[in-house]
Length: 213
Image (cartoon, rainbow, N blue to C red; front, side, top):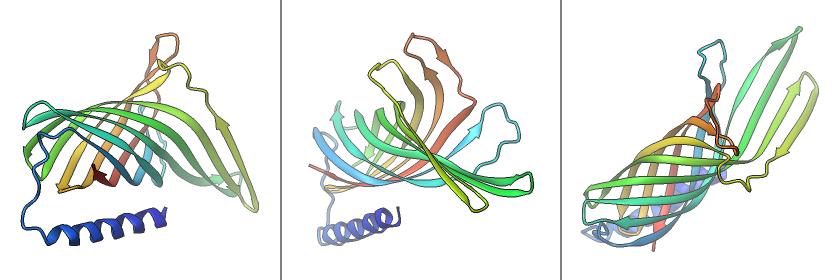
C-alpha cells in the first residue's frame, strides 16, 4: 500500500509540473470522456446499533475506470467501476492473551454519480453506489499463533449487493484528475429481492489520481 501511495504522489507531481508549463486548464465540461484511475482507500466499520464495538481503520487498494457524460456545460453523470479494498483492524485481550485481527474485503464498486461542474477545474459528485463482495480475508494473531481465513463469494446474481451512498470532488488539471471520495453502506440487497440493514457498515475515504482520455 505504501508503494501505491508513493506512485500516486510521483504521478501527481510529474503531471502537475507538466501542466504548470501551460497557463490555462482545458475546459472538458462538455466533452464525453473516458478515464482510468488508481489510488487508495482508508476504511473502517461502524456498529449501526451503537454498541461497544471499536475498530481501527486500514488502507486498501482502489482502482478502476470512469466515463464522464455531459448534459450541457454544468451538469452530467459519471458512472464508474472500481476494484476497491475495504476492511478494518481490531485488537484486544481474551483470557489473558492479546489478539489482533485484520479483515480485508475486496469489492467491485459501481457508483452512479450525478455531476455538477461550476468551474472547469472542479466537479462535484454525489450518488448511489452498488457494491459486490468478491472476497473476504481475516488475518488473526493470538500470542505466537497466526492464522488466515479466506472466503470467496459468487456474485452472479446482480440483485445481491450492498447499496451505498458516496460523494466527493474531482480536481481537473487538463487530462489529470485528482479524485476525493467518501462513502458508507446503507442496505444489503438480497438475491430474493429482500433488503436488510447491516449491523456493521463500511465507511471509507478514497484518494485517486486518474488520466482522462
